[in-house]
Length: 111
Image 1 (spheres, rainbow, N blue to C red):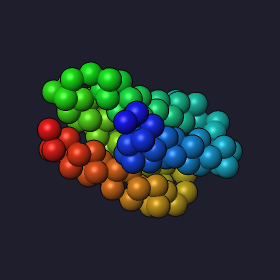
Image 2: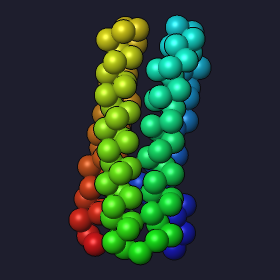
Image 3: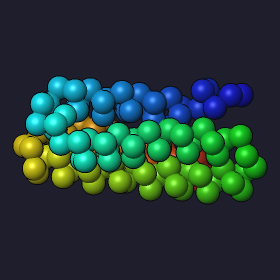
Image 4: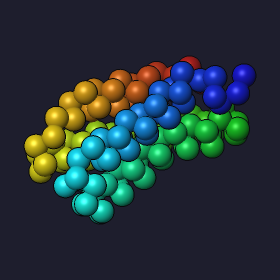
């Protein structure tokens, strides 16, 4: 099985696209380079930590999943900030990232 076959990896990649779309569709957020850059980096970090950890031992993979889960929680916080500052409804993405964080934690507990 390849990392691309993991549902959590597929979901993480899908959510990166949604974060980029959110930024692209909101001019004020797009122009907030600091916040938009931070949320892009955090969303990418979720997927890259899953990918990087997958090619290592189970012990290391479990640790990388914890890091990815932390990045997912960071994205959730940044989405809440975006919602408060720019009055953009991000609840749908917050929910998806919370679910993904739980899925990663659950998956990590199988090791």
